[in-house]
Image 1 (tube, rainbow, N blue to C red):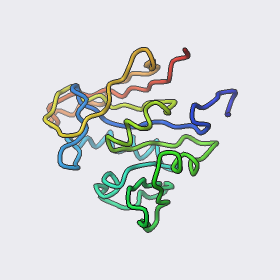
Image 2 (image 1 turned 30 degrees about the vertical axis):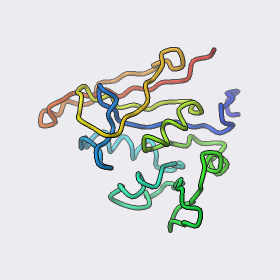
Image 3 (image 1 turned 90 degrees about the vertical axis):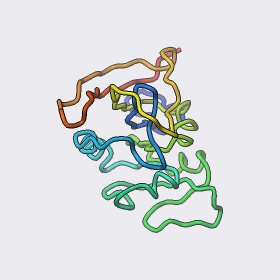
Image 4 (image 1 turned 60 degrees about the horizontal axis):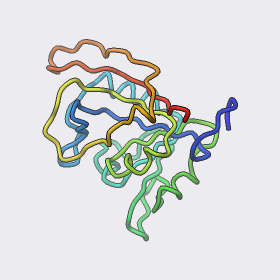
Length: 174
């Protein structure tokens, strides 16, 4: 509990993700776009915090592990240990290692997002205003469960060919 807030999982959890209009997030274990400003925002938000990811997401990172962050990787392989990371085998095990006092960021992939969405307290979304062909999608966000508390257009970047918006959601009180 921090500032009188009771976290759903007992630890502060936020999902951070960039999603297309059709909820697409990836194709062939790669991001669908390269938005320099969004990558800078991701770094600024997550540095000094714990990041939780699946093994495929970890393997897709250009630099491993992510620097200046505590990296937790969830893998199905019981004997696997990933150098420079805390390696776990379940969502529950990952949560047990999360920081109880600082926001912990869930950074993907799709299966990890699906498992953590019911447990997350916040969503940091980059809404890409275009649909993409993809094989990996983010689950739908229910207006019943989430309230947008901040929405800010990303800086214009004509070479991208699309606009995007930074949104922050908090879980609604039921």
